[in-house]
Picture 1 (cartoon, one colour):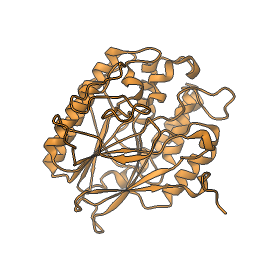
Picture 2: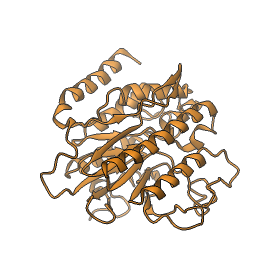
Picture 3: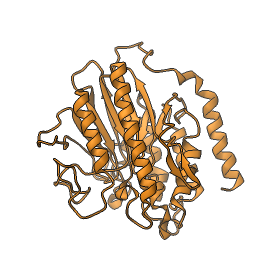
Length: 366
C-alpha cells in the first residue's frame, strides 16, 4: 500500500476511535423510548462507476436521513471481475478498501460489515489483479477490523472472535471479522461465509483455509446462540455474505441441496452443509425468531426456506436477502432494507424495502 493510502486509512480509523466513546456503551441500557428501533441492511455494492459515484452516495444520504440504530453491509465491495478503464477501483487494489472505508465512515449511525467473496476469495482472478486471496483478507482485517469498534461516524463496541483461529497469509490468525453485539434485547452476529463455494472452487480453491474458517464460523455461531439464551434475547440475526442454498428450488441463484439432509445435489463442492446442519440445530433449540441475512445472489427476498430433517418448515427462521447490483438499468437496485425491531413483538423483525428516490430508474420520476 502506498504511504499516502496508509495514512488516509489510519487517519480515518483514529478519528473513529476518538469519537467512539460517546456510543461505545450505547446498548441495552439505552431505553429512552418504547424500545422499538430500526436498522439498515445493504450489500453487493458498488459494482460500477455509476453506482460508486451516484448510487451509493444517494443510498448513504437516504440512510442518514432516517433514524437508524446501526447499518450492516453483507459483503462484496465491488463486482466479481475488474473493469478496464473504470473511474473507481474495481480490482482488489488497496484503493478499493479505502473507497469502502470512506462509504462506511460517511454513515451517521454505527456501520458494520462482513467480507464478501469479491473482496478477497476472488481477488486471485487475473481480472481482479491476481492478488493472493489470504493477503487481501489480512488487509481487510487491518483496514476494517483492527479495533473492537464498528465503523461509522458514531461507533459501538462489539465482541470479537478470538478462537478458534482462521488462516492468514502467514498462517493461523484470529477471525477478527466475526463480531457480535446486542441491542435492546436482540443479539446480532456477523460470520465470514463466502459465495463461490466458500473458497472451495474458482481460480485457486483453498480447502485448508475453508476448513479453519468453517470451524471458526460454526463455533462463533453456536456461541452467539448460547449468549442470546443466557441474556434472554428475543431474537438472533446472523449476517453473512453467502447464499448457501436451502432447498431444490433456486438453482439459478444458489446451490441446490436436499432440504432434509442439506447435502448439495448439483455436483459442486459443498462449502455449506456442515454449517447449515449446525445452524438448523441451533434454530430448533432456540425456538425464537432467527434471521439469516445475506447478499451474494442479488435478488431481494424475505422467505422461510429452511426445513427440519422431517421436512417440516422451521417457522421461527427467516432468510433475508438484501438488494444487490443490477446494472441492466444503470444504478438500479442500489437500494437498502429497513428492518423495524421490537423485542416485545411476536416476530421481533419486520421488513420494509427502501427504494432510494434518487436511484429510481425502473419508475422514473415525473
